[in-house]
Every structure is written in structure tokens, then in C-alpha cells.
Image (cartoon, rainbow, N blue to C red):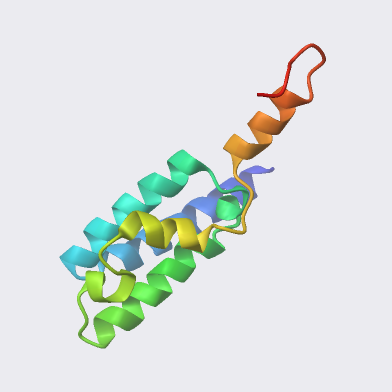
Length: 108
């Protein structure tokens, strides 16, 4: 990764966060909690940027329709997040698999 890639990545991230800041306050709060959750859980596809930008697209549509954020995602935000990444591998899963393949470790 060269310096140009880093600069371009920063520009894209700033543009993304500007879109988040343009959302109504309730959407911003839920987005930030979702983002924190995804960074903690670590879906492998998170780094390509499509998941988070897709959420912002979805939120912008909901806000434009005059809906509250919980009308869009439902009352259980964690379940909504889990559903978004249900078919994605996570870094935690990859780590668990690497541990179970080590010689001398027993499956539990």
C-alpha cells in the first residue's frame, strides 16, 4: 500500500463520515453504535467499505422518507447487525479455526 492509497483512503473515509454527520441525530447515534459493533465483531468484508456505506445509503433513504431510525432497523439493533453479517466470516471465526488446527489442541 503506497502513500497515494493511504491518502485516497482517508479522503473516502472523510467523505463517508460527512454523510453520517448529515443524518438526523437518532440515525447518527445508531450508526455509530453499529460501526462500533462491526469493528468489535470484525466481519472480514468490513474493510472493503461496502457494508458501512450501504448502511449510510439505507439510513439516508429512511431519513428522506421521514422515518425514525428504529422504524428502519427495528427495536433490536444488534439483531439487525447480526443479520447483515450472517453470511460473512469474522476475524474471530478465523482465529478460532486457526487455534483448532494447531497440533496438540483438542476440539471442545
